[in-house]
Image 1 (cartoon, helix red, strand yellow):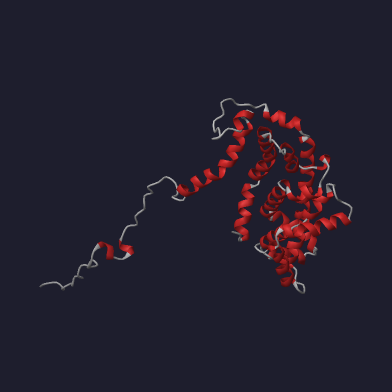
Image 2: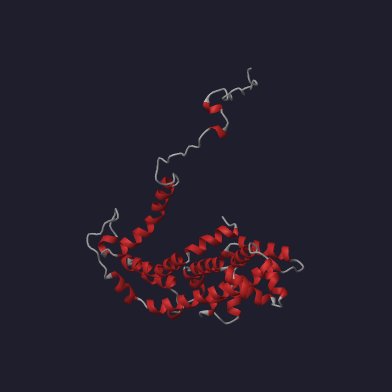
Amino acid sequence: MSGPIVEQAPPARRPAGPPSARPATARAPRRRRRRLPFSAWHLVLAPTALVMLLPLVWVVITSIERPSDAVQFPPVLVPHQVHWQNYPDAWRAAPFGHWFVNSTVVATAAVLGNLTVGALAGYAFARLRFLGRGALFIVLLATLMVPLQLLIIPTFIIVRMLGLVDTLPALVLPNLVTPFSIFLFRQFFRTLPVDLEDAARIDGASRLRVLTRIVAPLSTPVFATVTVITFLWTWNDFLWPLIVISTDSHMTLQLGLSSFVGAHSTQWTLLMAGTVMTQVPVLALFFLCQRWFVQSVVLSGLK
């Protein structure tokens, strides 16, 4: 007797068509091999960075040249002899130490003012609900569109009425708080979760305590960003000190560098050496806070 007949299932058919038309699941994933060991954008960014660095390199080269080489045309890009004596000569030719102290005091006071008032105002715009908050914030942003040149005369009149002309407070007062710092703090505070603040409020913490104990420790990037921007702006400011300061003892570094520029001749080597010395603190501060600076820009949604 023959056993039961078992039907065999037909073999599975392969999908018709060329391999490119088959489903993605039937193909093994292939990794694209990079032809370059770096991103293609580096081919554009590297030459752009070199072009932007060229003026700074020229300043450094001129600061170590002899006075006769600094006035040649075409310019001498490779000095025949390195003349480091320009730096001590520039330091002795003018009261650089006194100007350095003045610039440090003015920039530090402006940074502290922007950090304190900017954080308080930014937190109020980000968390507190009050009448006219949106309209007031729009007016605050509108002040960023006003050119600085239009504000010089009213600011000078106010400073003169206060009796602060030719004093260091006259340099600090207009930079004590800026709308841009308030905007930065407000944008960053809005990215923080509200749950932590609500929990602290339930435990009985005041708004000021929440800001100083919870929000501020989480806002290191925006504090570093405001510090760098305010320090750069105040340290490199030239126009306002030129208008309000007339005594050598109250000059800042940027205003003091103009003493190397004369009506008939300019000491280019000393001027460039002084310029390099004034930019060293700014570059050091930027590199120290660079990580937090980039993080704040990313989290705040700025471009």
